[in-house]
Length: 142
Length: 142
DNA sequence: GGTCGATAGTTTATGTTTAAAGCAAATCGG
DNA sequence: CCGATTTGCTTTAAACATAAACTATCGACC
Image (cartoon, rainbow over all chains, first blue to last red; front, side, top):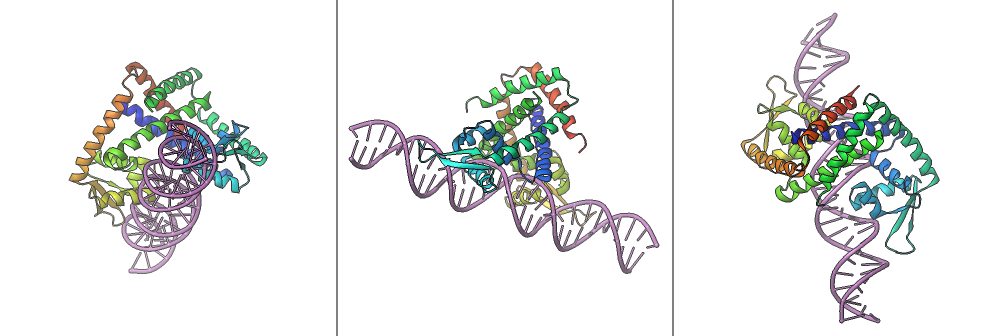
């Protein structure tokens, strides 16, 4: 039963990500990881270091490097050296990046609203609580 | 709230997969996708076509090609042309593949048992049910 | 039989992801 | 002040993943 629950959770994540990837790809010619980076930066207007980004997104450091580079090439984010620490870069969204993110977030939200439309609110509350509990167990001993 | 639930679900999947990947990598020098392929084949002793595999695992056709090739190179699975249809290959685990899978599945099960140890059974039941319901919504209109 | 569309797989181009190795700057212990 | 370690980030190699283009076969219809 634990196995079934785990597999079902993975399946939900996979199906949903597939859908979202397609939306971002078809409608906006971008990808989910790029959206994730932009979302993290949108929540941190003062910017984030590469390490902070990689921690926030649960991806490796090298991975962030390449995604940031692409977004930077598109002019969606900027990177400046931290005056306190010459090793560290502070990455933040540009004006264009914020505008682009708002558009993407809108589509994201719309997909979520539509998908969860028929999911009763009180069940959603229970689900959120159970997932929170599960994540605590999963993160145990990290 | 729907957004938070969705994000939390993704987070659970990501953290868990990270753990599992590490276990498979460190202890058995293999990967999660290979395990997934082997699991699907273990459940189908008579074998599966490439298309059936890719449908079962929710991954693209070309992706299955490369993973199968690697497992084949390790002698863990075999591929024969379907006598009914020369286009189609029937892939199945070898004896060595089944033995290897049993070992991997054991480690997998152990990780799940340990992770979910403190998750009360009746909550687990509710979680499984909610995830099942959610997956139905996610798969809607595929 | 011969053509035409559909199906099964592979290949290719692009992108994501990790671990590990490497580099440069910061920090710490003497 | 100065070597040793740590920390922040990039690079590299290998694996995974997709979509799109391609090859080969099958089936159906004439």
